[in-house]
Amino acid sequence: MKYISITALMIIALTIGLGCAESEVVPVEKEPEAVKLTVSDVISKSGEYMTTLKSFHFKMTHEVGATEFLPGLNVEEVSGDVQPPELLAAEFVGMFGAFPIRSMLVAVGKDNYLTNPLTGVWEQIEPTVNLGGFFNTSEGMASLLEKMTNVDFLSDPGLDSSNYEIKGDLSTVHLGSLLGETLENGSVVVEASINKNDFALNKIKFIGQAKVSDIDGTIRLVTMDKFNVPVEIEVPAMTETE
Image 1 (spheres, rainbow, N blue to C red):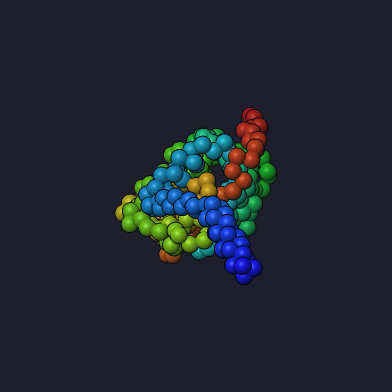
Image 2 (cartoon, one colour):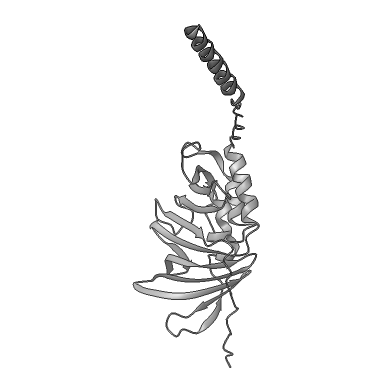
């Protein structure tokens, strides 16, 4: 009887244990699969985000070549701040003939003001390059990617990276807002990086000759950051001349 009692107790304990184990099983809910965006989706979302910006910082450099800003003045690097839709303040370095120069630029819509490299006095100019127009987030950069052809991802969008990398071809006529007079039937290769979280366009590279004054293989690189960080841009006071 003793052995029977022990056996019975073991069976009862095992039954209770299994019952408890079964009651504690919680079904695992499957997480919804992330929607895979097409390259067109990414470009569209980036365009929407860029049109909402109140301010940002930019820098344009040249991996190859330079940009003719005025006849005889070639800009190698320019950086500054933008307040869409029409305010821009920047500093640039370049060459005027054989002489290196550094100057300040303020763009208010289509009006451009430049400090004379020799005197430091502000002067209103008519440059061949319209940086203010290019960095207008609704008509400039934000629309360039949508005008590309042969668009595709430069790298697998599923990779564990912070940016979407895309590429495409862009007719040089669409760069007129940045470079002024461009090649009529030219085309450049565009490579761009777009943040996966907010779809901010943070880098765009233009590969190829876009202006007659460009050398073969010109490469322009534009980077953008400090989105919506407040800045103050003022129209420079002009010195009256007699």
